[in-house]
Amino acid sequence: MKIGRKIALNILLLCISTLAIGQNKHWVYVSDSRLMPPDSLIKWGQIHTYSTWLQAYSIALHKPSDTTHLLRYYPAIQRIVPVLPLEVMHYPAKGKIELGHALEQIEAQAFIEAGLNGKGCKIGIIDGGFLRADESPSLTNAIEQIADFKDWIHPTNTNPFYGRDSHQDWHGTYVWKLIAGINKQTQFGLATEATYYLARTDHGKNEWRAEEDYWVQALEWMYAQGVKIVNSSIGYSLGFDDPAQNHHPIEVNGESAISQAAQIAAEKGMLLIISAGNDGGNENWRIISLPADAKDVLSVGSTQLHSSQKAGFSAIGTKNLPYLKPEVSCYSATGTSFSAPIITGLAACLWAQDSTLSMPAIKDLIIRSSSLYPYGNNYIGFGIPNARKLLVLWKDSTLTHQNTIREVLAERKSYTYQCLCKSVTVFHKTDAHTVQSQEELSMKRGGIVIKPSKEIIKSTLVSDCEVVEIVWQ
Image: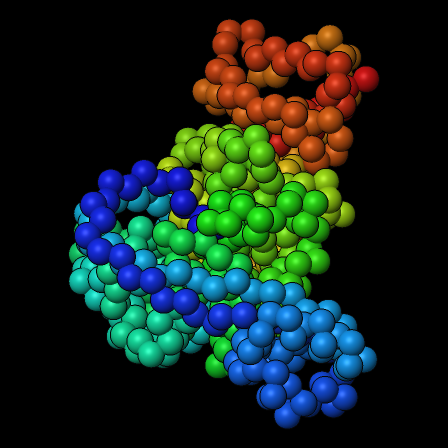
C-alpha cells in the first residue's frame, strides 16, 4: 500500500496494459545456502536473486505445486512464501499538486546558516517513481548528483524520469524535492549537495506483495553501493488488489520479511528513515505500516503546522512492539510521505558535517532534539526535531536534551497551567506512551484548566516554553 495513497487524484484512463512479472514467484528460505546451492534449485524454476540477509532465494517456480516437492525432498528448505505478480497499468499525465514543507517548523535555518548541505553523503530513495523530476526547477542541482538508478517495475528501464502517470509515478519526485529541492525562490530540502541512488520498487495504482520483494532487493543493492541513509516513503498494510494479500495488524511486530530486512540494514550501519503511514483515520488499521515497525529504523509521523498535534491521517504506534513508534514527527499536509524526507535531509546534513558519527548516534541526536523529549508517545513519538537544538547537542556530548522539562503531581479533578504562550498541546495517556486523546487549548486569563478522564494516568503538556509531564494522583 502506498504512503500518500489517499491523496485525491482525478485521472482519465486512456489505456491499460498488463504485464505479469514473476509468475509463480516465491521466497525460498533455507537454513544454510551451502546445503542448498543455486544449482539444486535451477531445475525447479528461474532464480532471480539470493538474499544473504534473509537467507532466501527469490525464484519463479515452473509450477506452483512444486513447493510441496521442495519442502518434502530438501531438509535445508525451512519455508516457502509466495510472491504474487504485479500488474503494470499505464495512465496519462496529470497536473502537479502543491506540497507544504516543514523546514521552518524544524528551524532548519540553523543548518543552512552553518553551511550544512549533505555534501559527501550517499542517500538512497526507494519509492514509486521519479516521473518528470528532470523538469523540476527545484531538482536541477540534484539531477547532476544521481550516482545510479534501478527500476524493479520495468527492469529494462534505465531512465529515472521515464513513466506514465500511473496514479503515483510522481511520488518519488516530490519526496526527492523535500530532501534536496532548491530553486531561486525557495529551499524545500536540506541535503542539496548529497549524492543520490534512486530505486523504483512500487507501482502506484496496483498493489501486490511482489513490491515488498522488490523493496528488499533495492535495499540490498543500495547497501552494496555504500549508501548511508535511505528514505522510504512507501509502506504496506491494507489496500492490496487481492484482499487475501492484506496484512493483519498483528503482523506489525517487526517480524515480517520486509521489516527484518530493514532491521538487518540498520544493524549493518545504515539509517533507514521510513514514513509511518497514513492509516491514522482508518478504523480497520490505524497503526504504522510495514516496515516502519522495524526496531532500529527511524519512523516519522506527521503533525499540524502550528501545533504539536498529530495530523489526523498519521498512523500511530502499536502495543505489539516493546519499543516506541513512531520516533519523531514533523509537518505535512498530505501524508507522512512528505514528513520523512524532511528528516532524511536533516540526518544527511549532520552525517556530512561529522562522518565519525554512527547512524544510531545520528538517530539518537535527532530524537533528543525533539519537542517532547523525553516524554514520547505513540502519536508523534518524541515530537518535532529541531535543527538549532540538534547543533547544540552535537557540539556538547554532555547534554541529554535541550528542552525545559518538569514533572508535576496533580489531583485528579484538574490542573491549572499558566504561561505567556498563546496555546498548548496536551496528550492524554493511559500509560507512559499510549495516547487516548489530544487537544489544543488556548491560553485564557487565569490559565488553562486541564481535566483528565478516569482512564488517564498521565498527560504531556507542550508549550513554546516547556514540556510538562502531569502525573494524575
